[in-house]
Amino acid sequence: METASENLDTIRARIAAAAREQGREPNDIRLIAVSKTFDSEAIRALIDAGQRDFGENRVQEAAAKFPPLRAEFSNLHLHLVGPLQSNKAADAVALFDVIHSVDRDKIAASIAKETAKQGRTIRCYVQVNIGEEAQKAGVAPGETAAFVERCRSVHGLLIDGLMAIPPVDEPPGPFFALLAKLARESSVSGLSMGMSDDFETAVAFGSTDVRIGRALFGHRPRQI
Ligand SMILES: *Cc1c(COP(=O)(O)O)cnc(C)c1O
Image (cartoon, rainbow, N blue to C red):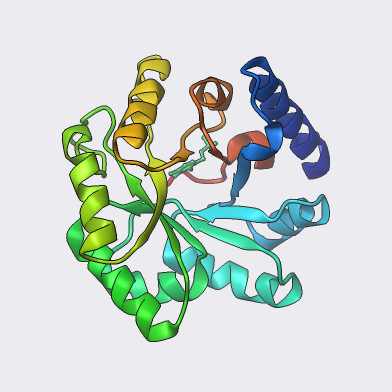
């Protein structure tokens, strides 16, 4: 089995190669290690290898694992990549630096209220339901620009970009291209797209944030 540090080297090299192929600067792409279901020991192995950006999709799970690691490593950067409920907004704002799943006014308002209350600065991404799938979270593609504008002007959020998870059973390229187009129309530069199986394609279409779990940590002990 490869070590965490070998996996990290391999993924970084693949991101860099995909970036250079497009004439892009590899350092412009942020690698987020998605550590959901993996324990602190596995996370620590990646921290020791130099990784600092981590993603989790559940507030409670992250709140159980990361505070001790944060106390030890002051420069960790935590990303919430999963759905957020309003009643968890206070915990999410206290723990995370970036929230990738803003997809409705109610949650935008809760994040804004908590950041003001806690004196925190949180960067946000608007999640887009890029394949317009019934079971997926996110704003509809056609509503994205208007929602980004409301997040900024009505709620006062710092919107850095858009996030999406394309349909599993279709080639992802056209969905990544659509997200990039929506980002241009919404005047945001961040593109949180690309996972273990499709991150090189995502980089080819302009991804600035790839969210990678299995390719770094190995098989997930349970599906979530
Ligand atoms: C789990 C997850 C990932 C990482 O998925 P892998 O296939 O393990 O790379 C990325 N983004 C989100 C939103 C996730 O929930």
